[in-house]
Image 1 (cartoon, rainbow, N blue to C red):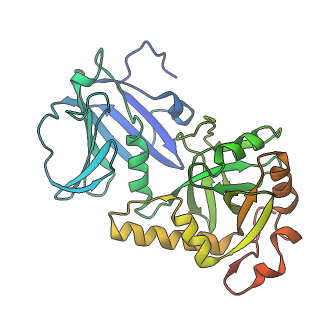
Image 2 (tube, one colour):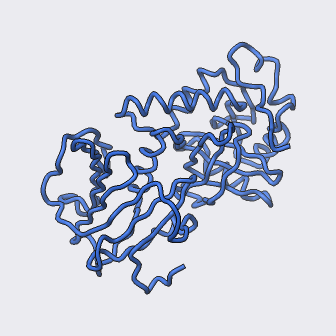
Length: 325
């Protein structure tokens, strides 16, 4: 890795198999760095990339070209100028002028990152600063690559992949910390997981966009079971029908709801996921007994994940065949 004191004109990260490159457009352009959370996902400056961005200084005082498409209600908005998607980002401390604008060209494989210099010190800029990196990933995934979920993902000491999806406050960070205590467990993320279909299996990937526990890993594992988290007076696994499981996951996903085609594809992807792996509501208490229940009953074929009620028509209970042997 390059020493922090040395000027960097290019940075690359790879998240869920998607490689982003940001390069300064000219010698007078911004020196680039990565946010700390992305350093685990940095890759060497060689090989093919999925999205190539050219970074430059610019004046973003004027209104953007194109028509408004989506307002996040927070720090970014999307405009469309012909075939170009224009994403603008504002800092809460200086809301008058956006600090960066990302223009994705047709095909979403190349683009321009324009940085308003008054927002940056010493000519250096953090490339792919949150939420830009996540916003770009969400839009790239919805083009047929996968879906990002509000979820914690863990790889057990036995190598099984469990995805725990939940809204804010449902217990993702608590779940991540319970599993982190178990030696040999890898927490892919305590807040954001990307799922993709690879070689006929649904695979979950860690991301840099961690939650309160700040847990993440640049690793992946096939999804063996999905759990929809909720707080309970006791630990209980309750099977879900395909429509219910798909709807609950959709409510815990990050998809471009302003894009009808992307939304349609993403919902179909989630339906495929819940038809392929066991999906359960998981009411749990925040102590190791919750983790122990999953370890004891989360293996396909055991009674707690293959109850008689889960065999009802439309229920997701039968485990996917484990092709890893």
